[in-house]
Image (cartoon, rainbow, N blue to C red; front, side, top):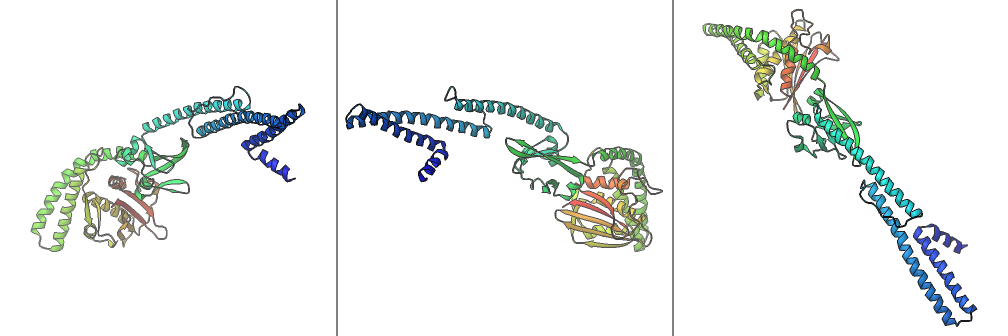
Length: 431
């Protein structure tokens, strides 16, 4: 029973053991057969033993030669299969036999390698065409490798980052400002997330999973109509505003010299200051087709808010700040604040209460204008040029404000308050 189990284990555990076991038993039986044949023909014991040993030596030599050839054939087939698994189709194994099962196995591996090589060639051509198409798209597109590092991008992505994408090669997703939540890619920067959306898909290249990320500008269509609207506005208003500001400024300055009452002098100084601001604004905003000539400086928060509040002495302002300074173009941010406060006043009933806030949120400065008015009647259209719900309005103020803030690489949003009456305008500016 034990001998039977040993033979079964020897023959079924591996090919090598099966061949060696078969050779051992067959050679032993053949040697004994030679010995007994010699005895049958009345040969001496020594002669019979020598004949048996010679036969056994010849048999073992032939077996070893055959054994090596068979095992080497399987080893070469294994190496060929391993090359196929690693997408190396250049290794071709020369058949060890001209017929039989091993020859058929080797021929099948060669045919498999050739077929996979053809498919890989077609797939590589498709991948090449995909990369060519990516290059010609005018939306930012990037490809992340299996480690979520940048491996390729197009010219639109370089323009978005304002640097050649090759300088960012192998940068991690975090360094590119991307995070992945619930299998969806998002921008980690709040301002960027409000202006861009991400569409992504996965594809296999050279055996590894890559991420194809497409950035979509969700405001591009609206901005085109806004540009046309602003061109009309600037042509109509620019000349008239410049002509009106000069005499108003001169009269305010002359009256300020003649008056002695401090409150009246302060009022005239505010008028003169606002005329100068408006004159500078019109001059610098003269060509909407060109980027604004922004002069980004650090602005003292308390001084800035006092100047803004002084324009509307009848409004009950409260200021909540935890940021000593923020960065913006002083002239343009002043005009934006005035427009937003004016809208808040017009949406409120006396007594008007407005809360101004300036806070730091990570790498973003957050400016808020919180009112107690009636709220937004149609939030979806508030930024559309020439759209207005005011009887005497022109529908250009909010569109202008957002255009200025976006050229600061920031964002502007307006929303109704959830628990109380009124609306909140939120400006996000890079620190």
